[in-house]
Length: 435
Image: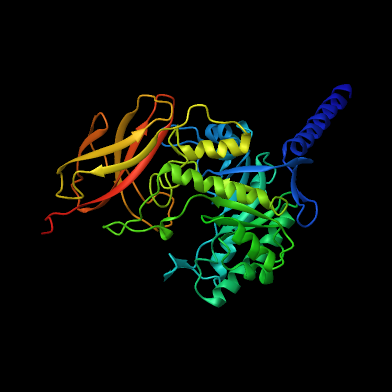
């Protein structure tokens, strides 16, 4: 009998420990305060969200993006879909002391705002499946210590053309908001807009949201003014921010968007960070875009690093998040020129790169050639073309790809302390040169 009581006590002790561990380690996030003076509270302590969009924990070359996020001063990372925010991702985030805005992707109705590819009207089987996927994910990870909020959908309304589809989506969204909150009352739920577009639909048809997310590449003030005009009684987050997107940039001779210099991009990040600071209490944090191998526009458009090598924008955000000034600033690349812009397959080319280093450090130069697809809205639409490059001081020789197409040259300028500057330029390969 004594042994039986002893075993029972052990079982009871283990059970109590499991319950205690679950409650101790799961992060609880609340929105506290009142209108204009809201703040996040995580594990019963005020939490100032300093974020980075980070779709992968580790790059293809082994680069540790969570370590970079931590070094930059971020305390939160954002995903866009459940395929990204898996257990490995969440576990690694926890190891790096990072919280996660866990994204759950909802389909866009119109691909690139053109072709109709999905409907939220009478699509019962697929919507039931989407609901199940969402709730399964929430129930699976709601007690994970890294998760602090659920991000249901990204820019769906912007990529939906028909009025009835927008309303149907919002009703589906509201249904999911209520079910997610019922399954997990300890974490806020938000939806992410493309800029200020279609906010009125959320006010009317999705009143259960705890927050709104805004993706912005043009500032914060106009978002705040529209949010205020519509009299929302919930705060917002800047769920993506960065320099001007390709859709707002001038085009080159091959109809490709002209990418800005790193120093111009750094200034854009700084402006948005300063604008958001003015609206603290309504704006509860920002996610800088982007830490990862590539983005939907190019290998370098919004990337804060090139692998482990840090760009000027990385340090701009780091200073804002931590107060630390960068002691060794990255190189400044002012120009990249090609000796030819229209070439035959395999033709020999030269990239001439103009750059300097603020600390007078010796620089090294290289290039990567990639495909040049734009506005694809996929995570990895572009790839590096494997070509042999021959750097000669600030000139890099290479052979044009064999396949006729338009390509981008990414000029890379490295210092000796882990920094890089990047400029891009387009060229075209044709079987027969134009006269």
